[in-house]
Image 1 (tube, rainbow, N blue to C red):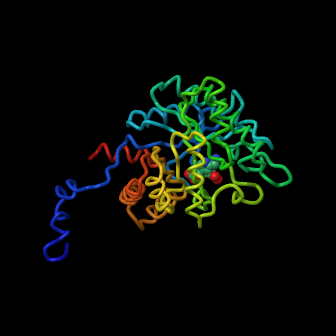
Image 2: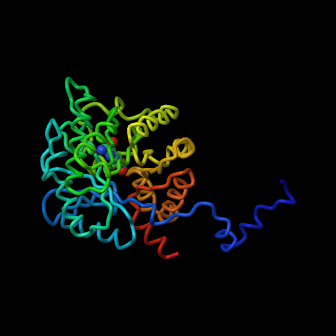
Image 3: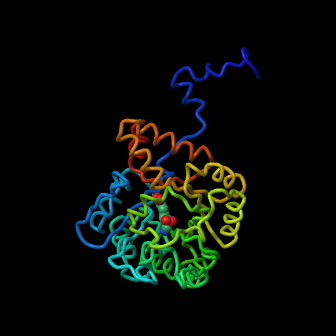
Length: 325
Ligand code: PBG
């Protein structure tokens, strides 16, 4: 194929042709909307680095979840900010913990909305690490027991799916076992399989007040330089029983999304993280780029790379744009 027999512009000349040959289509069905639950009443606290996102007390969470549901978004992903943090992160698995309360209430009000819960300790520990600490080190095998207990308590509260994000070895197997032993063999796990130690989580750490108080997360989250290792991490999770695999962040890791889609036959989620959202919001506020177009291009790219499921703070805006087409 070559010019002048082939002219790519023939099929690009107007919107009808462009629609006809479009390869990637976004749908509201793909979206998962992350939300932050805080204890208290009537709290809707804006997150400065994530314009349009809030820390919400349960009463407001129900409203926000309903708005998402009415827009046709199939699922929310819940994070919790407990009233008190401690060394062991006990708020993560307390029967009346913030996420457990939120799940119960939202499930009661909106039984058909899928509730996914983040399973991690960083929001609940005073030191901000994703696990149990001893002598400055995050212990793996002790942590996965606590993660399993956390997932189980979320399941008991009524979560539809759990999403472990701590990047501890063996966490999926530990959680699967705890769920199965307690009659939750039907509850799926969405595994944050390839989660990188990323600077793009900055705004989230403000949102969840979960920045590590010492050191960093490089001893458990992945080195951004590595791709083969991501494939190893994903295979481990698949073998341990993950139902959905995830790559996180999304935009700087489209190559990983693309490889994961080719190498595994499980549904693949991509997390369009807080920093990816904040960058565009900030530039748009300056008038430096068009937010809606940049949002659409970002999520289209993530889908084109191979993601089946998009976890994004733009879920509501996207649902509205898609409905308006
Ligand atoms: C950890 C967790 C993080 C995010 C989701 N789960 C932060 C981290 O690892 O520091 C980040 C999400 C985002 O940046 O939007 N529980």
